[in-house]
Each structure stands twice: as C-alpha cells, then as structure tokens.
Image 1 (cartoon, rainbow, N blue to C red):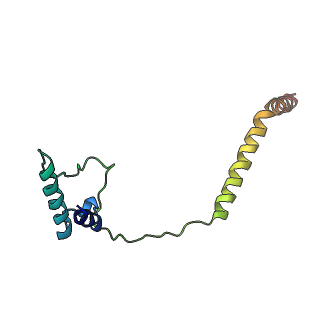
Image 2 (image 1 turned 180 degrees about the vertical axis):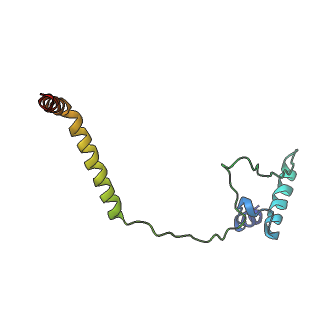
Image 3 (image 1 turned 30 degrees about the vertical axis):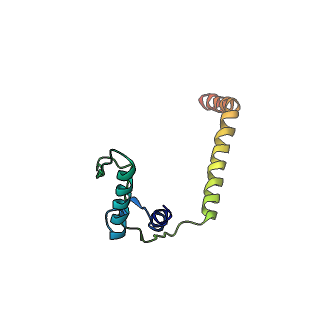
Length: 114
C-alpha cells in the first residue's frame, strides 16, 4: 500500500495531461487496476469538452507564457476619481440649491421681458 501511495503522490494529476504523457497513462491504468481489485463496477469514461460551454476551459500545456501590459499609473486613477467626485459634488450642490437658482432665473427672465 505504501508503494502505491508513493507512486500516486509522485505523479501530478493535472486533468489536461492525463492522456498526453506515458507516466500519466500508467497512473490512470494503475488506478483502474486497483479500483477493479476492490470494487465491482469500474468503467473508464472519456469526456470531451462541449464547445458551446465557455465556462470550462482546459489548457493543453502547463508552461504558459506570462503576458505583461503597461498600465496607467495609480496617480491617473486618483486624478480621475477626484474629477468624478468634483462633478458629483457640483451636481449635488445644484440639486440642493435648485429652488434658489430657479427663483433667480425666473426673476432674470421677468426683468428681461419688461
């Protein structure tokens, strides 16, 4: 049992590599053999990814290149946040003082017509 555990823990079990490398094929065969030894109904099933289901993605290789992008510095985010806060502050101030501004505009319009 300890040799089987040592073998199982020495081989990585990445799903996308189980049918690509000989060591992984041996792992699957060993697991199937041990399960058949202790269980009654053991079947091996091969699953294919449904192309219409974009939620699940299997990658073919473990070595993926790292992609880096230059982004705007944090000072830009702070400046943009300050501009948005100032804009919202002006809108809030205009809404709070709408009655005062309305009476002034109404008086100015009356004086223009007379």
